[in-house]
Image 1 (tube, one colour):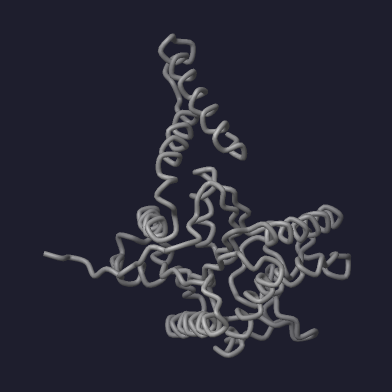
Image 2: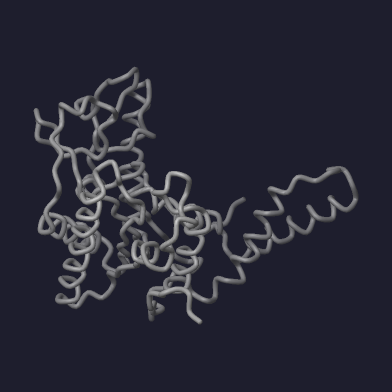
Length: 321
C-alpha cells in the first residue's frame, strides 16, 4: 500500500556535487537550510553574502553589482532606528557604524564576484514575486528595514519581468563562468503576510518564470541550468502539518532533512557518502559532552576523532573543523 504520492526525480548525469565542487547559494531562507547542511558536511560553500534575498530582482542586482565591482558609499546607505542599513542587503549586515556597514558591503561584493568566478554550482532559491518599491526614488528594495510602509508601493512582479531577470542572472553568470551549473528552486515557505491567494499567485509566477528561463537556456544549447522541486516536494510528498514548524508556515527539521536527502539523490555524487559519514562522525564527536573529560576512555575517544580529522584534511585540504 502506498501512503504517499512521490515526485519522480532523476539523478543528474553530469556536474554532480562532490568535495572538489565550489558552491554559491543565494536567495530566500530555505537556501540557508540547504547551505547549513552543505557547510556541516564541509563542502566548499559561500552562502548569502548579502543575507537572505527573497525576490529575483534583488538577486539580479547583487550579481550585477558583484560582477561590475560596485563600490558602496555613504549615498547607498541610510540611518534608521539607531543603525545604518542598505536597501540592497538584509538587516543582518546592518550596523550602528556606517564604516563597518560599508566595509561589510564592499567585502561581500568582492567575495561574491570571486565565488561566481570559481563556482561549479550556483543554487538560487526564490521566495516571493512580491516586491516593494520606494515611492520617492522608484528603487526596488531587497529589504524594507522597518521603514514605514507608507514610503513604499507593493507590487507583484509579472511573469515576463521575472523571466527577464532570471535570464539576465544566468547570462551574467555564464559570461564569466560558462561551466557553472545554475540550480533554481522555489522556497516551500509560505508568505502568508501577503495573503493566502496572493502567496499562491506569487509562487505560480516564480515557477512559471523559472521554466520559461530554463526553456530559453535549452534553446541556446545550454543544459547546465536546472530546476529542483523543493516546493513541490513540500506541497505534495509532505502535505501534512506534522512536517511544519509551530508557525505552520516553515518546514520543520524533519521536512528540511527529507528535502535535503532528495537533493542528495539528484545532485550529489555517490562518491561523497563515505567522506560525509566521516565528517558527521567528527562533528558529533566534537560536540559530545563527556561525563569525565579527564578519563582514559574519553582521551582515547578524542584521539580517534583527531585521527579522522587528519585523514579528512589529508584527502581534502579545504576541510577545517
